[in-house]
Amino acid sequence: MLIAISFLVSFSALGQYSSLQSQYMFNPIALNPAATGGEDVMSAIGSFRAQWVGFDGAPTTESITVHAPLKDMNSSVGVQLYADQIGVDNRTTVNGLYSYRINMNNASLRLGISGGLSLIQSNYSELQVFAEDDQEISSNTQVGVQPNFGIGAYYTAEKYFASFSIPTLLGHRFEDNQFRSFSDLANYNFLLGGGYEFDLKNEMGLKPSILMKFRANNRVQFDFNTKLKLNERFDVGLSYRTEEAIIGMFEAKITNQFYAMYSFGMPISKIAKYTFGSHEIGVKYNFVYKSNTQGPRFAGW
Image (tube, rainbow, N blue to C red; front, top):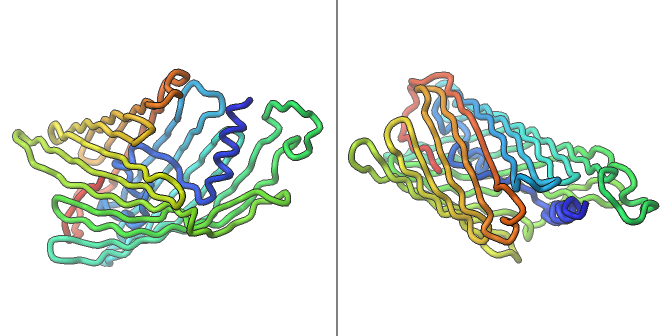
């Protein structure tokens, strides 16, 4: 299963690893722990992503996030659970989330941190190999329990926002028959983004945004996003990820508390001939609709 081997190599080489998601507009905590509490109410978000559908061993990601502001405080807390499978590699992560809000004139700045554990295992026995006696991949690895941390800052005003984060500060590598943690500045994923909301006629709005992903010795990657608010209930959008994909997005506000989203991404490289694209679905429920929290609201991406 050659494709699984290629996934395995790329997964190990990444070091500091962050899950890929298209609809981070729907859940900005996926990229930045400082967005914790940004809904100003207790909120629960669940999502599922299948990348490159049609490929054997293609990546999948499932995530659940619950977060809320603390009463009469400028702090917010949350928990995030996500599970990734890339080829024969499996990773399950549980993160605690914390952010502190600094109120400013007509704006707010949130500083956030995440911390938790990842359970990692490589199922080498599922690979099709040419040398049956290769001891390196003849059996599955032991389950590795590794720490992980992330930091971020999130600035929001009535009509715009800015975001900076390093989602993962520790990397993991497999050597000497066990997983080991390491920290390498050259492997950090730096995420910088922002956006603005323009009011249009008849309750419509235009929300362009940009996300820059940077890592030393790699090309800078950009996501250029545009979402059109059709009315108070429906948003549609389009995203272009440089050298990788074009993504269509849809979001519905089904009730004042319940939201749903769907996105479809099509690769723009040669891989497009062999896949049915990438699909992502998600739901969000805000348990309390009205909030006494002071300060501006901007939903971010």
